Length: 437
Image (cartoon, rainbow, N blue to C red; front, top):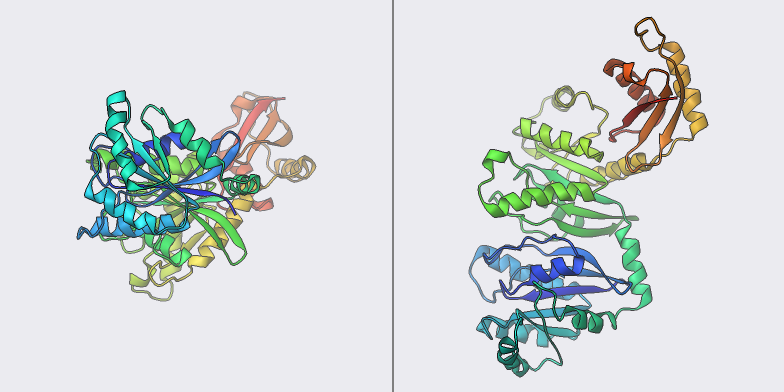
């Protein structure tokens, strides 16, 4: 089994700052407001060649009546349950609090190794004050400053002693799994879809738009299928983004797209496709991601015989020119066709990895060019002699010809259509380059 470390503690002690430092990237949102991290999020850290999973959790507030704090507490307990070791973070600047005590009481019941980590110890005076935390009775206690990184080395050395080489290797394999990002506007049902797929409350779902702020990674391993699902915050139009945090969330959602191999774009069946949905779709296509279009809340639409067919036709018209995309009508709430969505995503993932042998490519495409030559330019016939697929993550093809700059868009579209007809690239944007032979 791979090794998992959870970072827990009350709100605002610097958990996300440490999380970002371990991952060597800004993945968790950091702000001075408490309750910024709501769901638990995952990342992979590497220390001296040992890889392990890290879970960042929301701030734990025991016995709170606040709807989000209650949900966060639930998420924290799940994280503690999933982890092999726990960093229990406290803050030297404010000293010991009742919330720290209630968290400590909870962790004492756990049989897992707990590393009591006193954060914000950035001078000798703080170090003296921080000594009061010894009274909590944990064996492993470390004094760090996660903003500057001082003291984190000793903490990581102690943690990585627990990690076997096998566990590190398994974490590496996990990092190479297909990644599917669930994207779309706020309130289209992204978190509901994630929860329906894995059959547990993995993310907080509410009617309030903007509940999900961070991107959330979930390892899916059921029915002989294994991949990582990424739930993202809703991407809304620029002029609608008021709160700073929401601005970060949108950037985070766009970053999640970068990380993903395939994007599952959710649109609301009741509202239909909007300009913003088309923007999100184009962004994913520009980034070269595989795309599956999911029309969610299909259970709420009153249907006649051809409702789905007509809606699909309308969607394809609006998505033109990139129309070779799977469209599925689903309901996350009723769990209709949600597993079909996953199968389709895996097919699109396979299409994106597809490498066409050069000989096969030339046989097919040169025949198509014979059937319909490029237009003559300035009295010169344009000749395409040779085609090859480039070794890139996004399927890209280089066409070698005598006048590369004179090939116009309609002919490029013709070549792309021929590639799609002969080789299965459904759901995947293709890139065509024309080079001087």
